Length: 355
Ligand SMILES: Cc1cc2nc3c(=O)[nH]c(=O)nc-3n(C[C@H](O)[C@H](O)[C@H](O)COP(=O)(O)O)c2cc1C
Image (cartoon, rainbow, N blue to C red; front, side):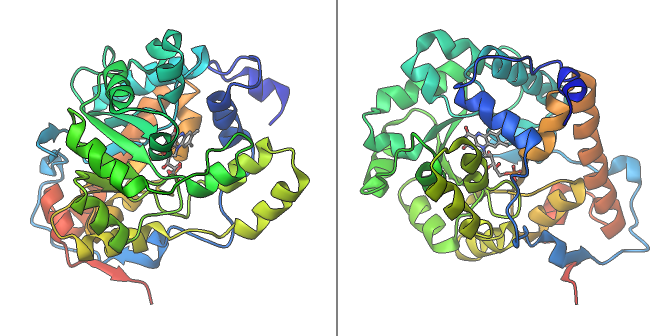
C-alpha cells in the first residue's frame, strides 16, 4: 500500500506505535496474514440449485433468534477492536452500522480498559447499538493472570454487553512478544466463571478452530455458546510474526502457516456432538454464500472478521454496503435453494460436497 492509499483511510491516522490493537488492525489491512496451505473448507461445498422454489424473493426472511434474543439477521461482526482513539472510532462505526442493519456485534478484547479505565469509552458500543446483541470479549487465559470474576463483569459493563465471549488463543500468545502462555487449569476456572457471571458466557478461538469434543466439554462446563473461529481466514501466528523481532520465532511462524482446524470441519464436528448447543460459524467467511454454507452445516449465526475491516476503516457507507451485500447474497442463496427462512437453511438437504 502506498502513502496516498494510507492517507485515504480516514480512520487510520499515524499514531504512536505500541498500541497493540491498532497494530493488529494495521497488519490485518496491510500484510499477508492469511494462513497458507489451508482453507476454511467451505469451498468444498456447493448448493444444489432449486429451479422451482415456490417462493417470492421479497418474502425471503433473515430474522432469527440467538440465546433468546431476536435478531434481524443471522450475522455477526466478530470481535476485533477498541482500546485507542482510532480503534474506538472503528468500534463506533461498527456499532452504528451493525445496529442499523441488525447484525450482532463483538468488540475486541476489553483487557486494556479493565486495566486502564480511561480506555473504557472506546469499547462502549452500547450507546451506538441499542437494539442488537453485543458481545464483550476477554482472553480466557486472563483467568490465570489475576483477573477475577469482578474484572470479567466489569468488561461486560464497559461494553454494555448481553453476552461475554472468552477467546482461546494459545498459538497467538506463543508468537506474541508479550504473550501469556500459561493455559493450565483453565477448564475449572471457566466453569466457575460461568457459574458466577451475570450474563451467558461463550468461548471462541481466534482462527485455529474448536473441535467437537472440546466444545462438548465446554458446554458441560456451563458455556452457553461456542464460536468455532476456524482456520482458513486470518492466521494469528502470521499476524504476530510481523510484531516479533525474535528471528527464531519469526522463522518458526512459517512452519505454522497451515495450522488449525478448517471452519467447515469445526462446524460439522461441533454440531454432530452437540445437537442443541448455540453455535457461531466463523473463520474465513467472505460472502453471504459462505454464511449460508455455515448455517447449512449447523451454525446458528455466521461471523465475519477481517473481511469487513477494509470497509470498516473507509466510511459508514462502505461498511453498510458491505453488510448489505452479504445479506443480499445470503437471501439470494435462500431463494436459489427454496429456503424461505433461516430455519429452512439450517435444515436444507441442498448443501452437497463438490466432487
Ligand atoms: C483486526 C482484528 C483484531 C482481532 N482482535 C480480536 C480480539 O481482540 N479478540 C478475539 O477474540 N478475536 C479477535 N480477532 C479474531 C476474530 O474475532 C476472528 O475470530 C478471526 O479473525 C477469524 O475470523 P476471520 O477469518 O473472519 O478474520 C481479531 C481479528 C481481527 C481481524
